[in-house]
Image (cartoon, rainbow, N blue to C red; front, side, top):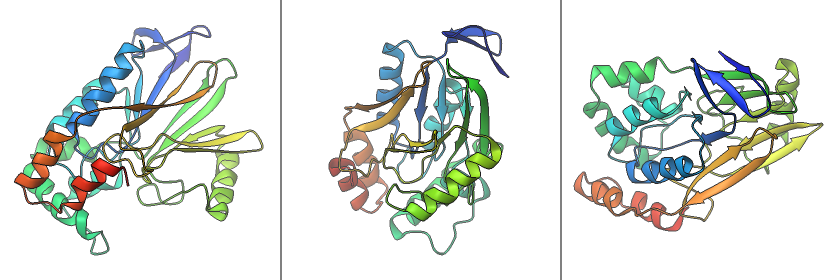
Length: 252
């Protein structure tokens, strides 16, 4: 449970901390990118991190990423790749470049890690955050399909129905991932925010992405340089599709 002490501090599980939030998403077993982002967050004095899911898939350090995320994040949402890895069953419609990594991930995870992924929530609410007392909602995809809904800023119909859902559940700010593309959209005082991807950005910028939502209810996007060499070496070692390596280099 989270409750406000004053405009600058919250208390979570008995620990007093600054109320600024770091929001991360879509790590996809890219340990190098995750470590770089966590290091950057630490230098900013932020110790409350919320992860919007997809800890695994695409890259080759799923176990390390799962344990690091669960150790560092106060809230972790279940993504579509997490759901698949927990169940061990890949849908037929999944992309070709994701199937082999997910097969490998499913064979690599122990029952312990699969249970960790299975137990993650699909949605989280945080009430009256910051000086403006905003109600926050966190999900991986979208409210209609929590795992697989893609919400892009150019899809006005999708945004319209999502804003209507936010009004229904009294959410002022909705944080979501899945598309790997950072954006903000606002309508009638409600905001939809995507922090982008830590492990596989797709907005033309290869740097790892995350955002900071501060106690003044301000959104700040952050990009972090990291060395993808070890991640690319893992792709080659396990003979994953090489376009996964190219994506890390060009951010697409």
